[in-house]
Image 1 (tube, one colour):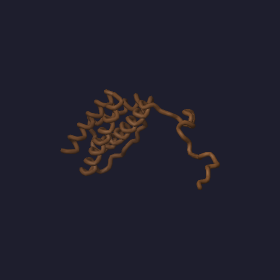
Image 2: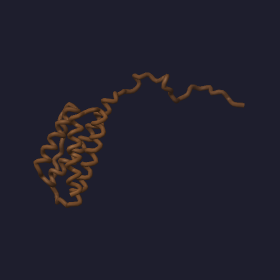
Image 3: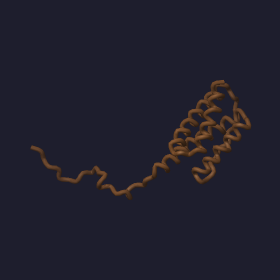
Image 4: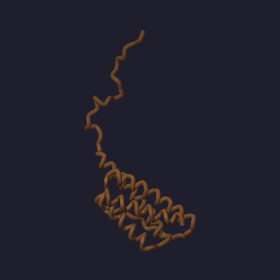
Length: 135
């Protein structure tokens, strides 16, 4: 009633796949990549805020973020110069909300990889952007 399968399956199984077929990263490496991505995005938003609303606090935060990125990636981050345009309150609020969200994501990843320095920096940035976004 049923015809037997005469050809080999094109689908591979785990048993037939060798570990050399594709690159593997450890959980720690994956978390490092995620954390570096979140911190890089937070640095970009921080640089944009610095262009619109210069302050010493944002300058220090940007340098600390760049230091953490250098530690994680092994090279200093590339940073684009952001030209200051007309700063509207809604744009600043949106940037602070974005920075708050990015800092929260970085905090979650830093906590899961037990990176105290990055977790503390992320929590501080969350606090700073939460106060500014609400005010």
